[in-house]
Length: 121
Length: 110
Image 1 (tube, each protein chain N blue to C red):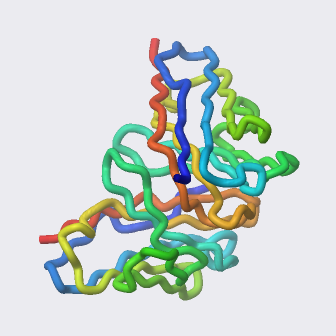
Image 2: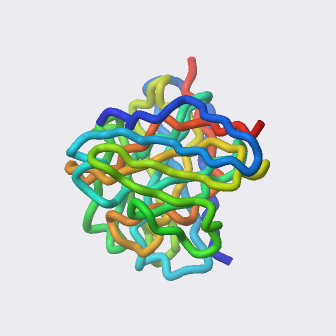
Image 3: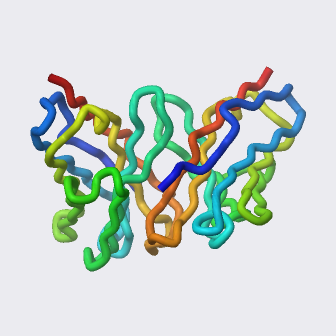
């Protein structure tokens, strides 16, 4: 079964850091561009970041550029999101999602259930 | 990166058809055929319903169709069913090599 499972969320104070993980199974992980998408409470979906299958191409939303770093470990079928200098408006459920054909411009066909990040003093 | 514009809500009766619009700019919707639509039931993972403007993934009902004209994309659901009640989001690839989502539309089946 194709599956994505996120972990690492929690409650942190403004300015602190958190590292999210996404464990993939059921497909050839290194062949797929992977993405992070978030949804703040009561708000819509917001794309956060993408990374190509080899890890050679990375892009970020302006709202997180310079603070968040996406990475992957293809040997461990894992995707990561290092989040630094967290702000209250980063509070959201963070989900990883697979690009359906693996390409950078492909829509997201498999999503995880998400992990909640709460930034509050 | 401004969000794409969607109506906040739409509604329809079972069996009817509804259309949800998604308006962007020439830097996203109007410039690329990489527009997709997602169905999201709260508490569940989003589901891809349409990719590349008008293509349905395997397993998606042919009651769902997509189109685009200029800077506006549309999702049409025909033969509305109670299970279609959900939030719907459009998304587009952009000229900055990023993705942008719409604000979401809540579909109510009356």
